[in-house]
Length: 526
Image (cartoon, rainbow, N blue to C red):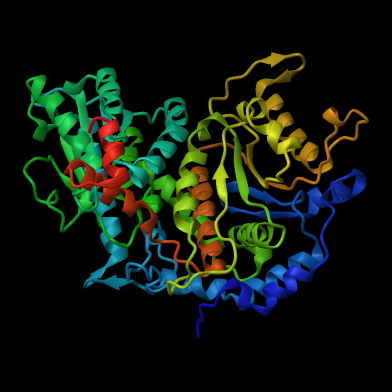
């Protein structure tokens, strides 16, 4: 039987707190470091390797983490999730984003529907629609092909799909699968929609409105902005727009759209890149076959997350180490640092996925917890970040655990040799150097040039960013977040924290304000 207990009530967590600390500076120096780098590896799907040599763990810590995973029933809880248990207690919902890319266990039936069949059906409908757009069977009113797709959505309807599109854009061009340019409108700031519309030919653009409820204020505002632009261009908006929504929303059967593709309440926005939310824009941009490869990569990584042995489950181990760093070692934040320009927006997506999921101060039952939960997460691609915030990471007063992502090969296979090495070799040299520099530091009598070291990191190493590897990488972080939520005993699948501001904003717009809110409204000329 599964039991949901707070982290600080688990005996294994109390034991973990007493395990001797690892001096990572000593552990990563000389022969010790070479031995750790060789041994502290776990294979992932799609050729990835998770290397945690520079983390503050050893055999004793790993043994304690394994006990924690067992007592916290991480494997059993994941099994309950993918078999259709009501894991989202805040909204009394199932959690089924893994089901969009494969079936890990039993058939899941909800609302009288086999949900795996439902998700596959939507993928097939999207594929058929995308193929008709690419072939010219579906065209604009003038019978001309659409050349651009614009996604209108915010939060998970924007961050994930945008990050995935940017990650694969150059790969698709190199591999002759690039079908349509994609743009994204998310911010209710009118400058966002205006700048995107100014950059595209609206007569040859198809717009995707993404709103599960069909009532999201920012999204509907931007839809009106787009419809106004189409009208001003003498175009029929209904011939240029499709919807991704729920079957019960007002958008589902509206004549305002060429087609509607469906999602449901069992997939949160930040977990929706492998659903119709990501499927429509990515299939239109790159073709349904590329989106299918992306799903296959995610499914392969999901299978690894089923393993009970933490040394064969990279997501679970990554999650456990993160909780150890947060709750025992006391580190308040973490940085995700991809050494690939293709992943330029991946940290922004993970920022939402992680902080919206585990930024909670009450447990699954609404009771306050007496320990810290999700860390502040941030990041930028290397080597850009090295010339930005790495100063604080190396010599600041806070220790920030680091999660590097590196690739042996670049996407475009275009490079030059400068000073006896290629640009890709220089990129990889930088990430290797940073790991050792953070861990080992450098002594100097000039304290301004002294590096204390002892700063932990891990690295996920892959061959190249492609659809399948991107899917695996996405699934790794989604499942890491899930396991950490299980450990903290929080509900990682609702987001009540975003609601209060929305409610107050509506009061401001209705001029139903007093006190500070009224004064601020007046100052902003609302």
